[in-house]
Length: 293
Image (cartoon, rainbow, N blue to C red; front, side, top):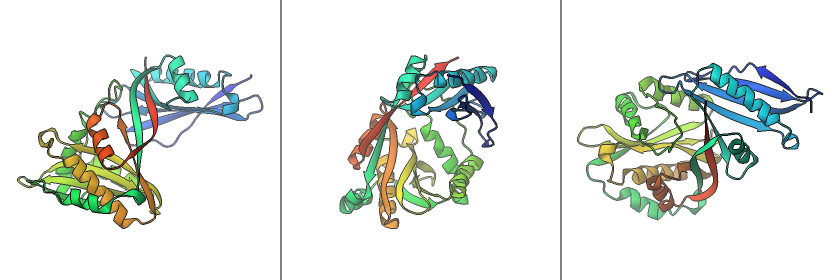
C-alpha cells in the first residue's frame, strides 16, 4: 500500500500544552489514519507526551498505525520527551497494537455510571444529613467565589497522591489563576461546572472537593472530574459525603439528565468503594500505556 504521512498544523494550543498532528493518506489521497501528540509545557510535566492514534478499520494491519507512531515518537524524542503515554480500551485493536509496539501497561482504569433514575433519594438524603462534626458542605456553580479561591487552589493538593501506578504523569501546580482558567474553559464550551467542598469549620479552609460537569443542555450524562480530600482530613467520610451531595444536586436540578460518569484507577480501592456504595456500576475498562524513550 502506498502511504503518505503529512504533518498538519494544529491550532489548539492551550496554556499547558501544545499539540502536533499527522494525517495518513493512501495513493488516492484518501485519509486512512491520524495521530495527535500533545506536548505538555508546564514545569513538572515537560518530560511527557501524550499520543492519540486512530486508523480506519479497513486499513488496519497495513502498517498505517506503525508509520504514524514512528512519526510521533520521533517528534517526541526531538522535543526531549522522556516518555509517551497512550490510552486504549481493554481488548480493543488499539490495546493490542500498543502492547505489540513496545508500550508498557502502567495503569488500569475502570469506568462507571450511575443512572439517575435509579437513585434512592431518601437514602441519599439520609447519608448527606448524617453529621460530620467539624465540617460543613458548601457548593457553587462555575468559577470559585473570591473568598474561597486561595483555599480551593490549595485543596487541589489532595490529588497529589492519587494512585496513578507507574504512569509518570509528573506534577501539576495549581494556583488561583489555574482553577479559574479551568472553570472558564468549561463555560466557554457551553457546559456547566458544579463544585461541592467540605470546609473545616475551625479554620474556614477547604478540606476536600468534588467537581461535576453537566452538559450545557442538561441532557445526556454528566461527568465527574476530580474528587479529593487533603491527607490531614481523611478518615471522616468526606469524600462520600461530598459526592453524595453532588449527586443530590444533579438529580434535583436536571430532570433531563440520564446519569453520571466517573473513572477510577483499579488500585484506588477507597474511591472504588465510595462509587460502589453510591450505586455506580461498571461500563468498561481502559489501559494506560507508557513508552520510555
